[in-house]
Image 1: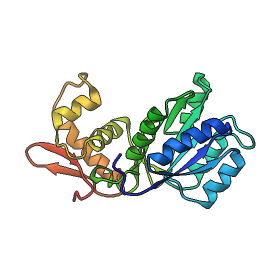
Image 2: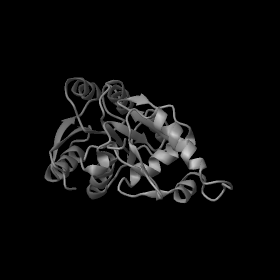
Image 3: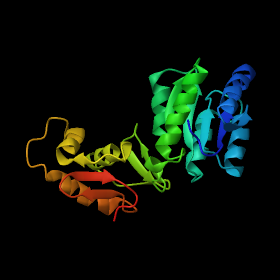
Length: 227
């Protein structure tokens, strides 16, 4: 994963064997893991400590995993959350995403796959460092088509969100207007490609800091040093 520091993980799981096995895999992979077997204990940990990522079972003693997820989201901390549970019904998954879980993983799960999902979430929220994640707290919730800055939802239209998402996913790439039109409208748009300029102008007004760079004669690029 190429982590530059040890990332902290809150792991809520009441089944001892699963907790021990997955904790060992996380630790070997360089994570600092704090375990909990009760939801109320996990909520206390959320209030007392800062975590880069929380991996939460739902059906645990005390407060359930959803209550812990709510505690994470109301804490104001930029913590990624993966729900790890045997519950695979659609209603439960929708509830998790409505509460802004970043991912939903159904048990049993391969430890290697879980580690990859953890890495993906950390990369998405900027937890893994690197040039592409120097986004100063700008977070995309892809399942909800929303962008957040320091916990505050930005008032983006769907087209503005898709534009931002496209640029952020490949920050070193310069996109032409035609490529950005395809990413937003697929092949349904007929008209002048300068519509992208209008979207960029409006998006820049709503972003908390300059991060869309104009590349003259080509198009646009994501970069936090944009002026």
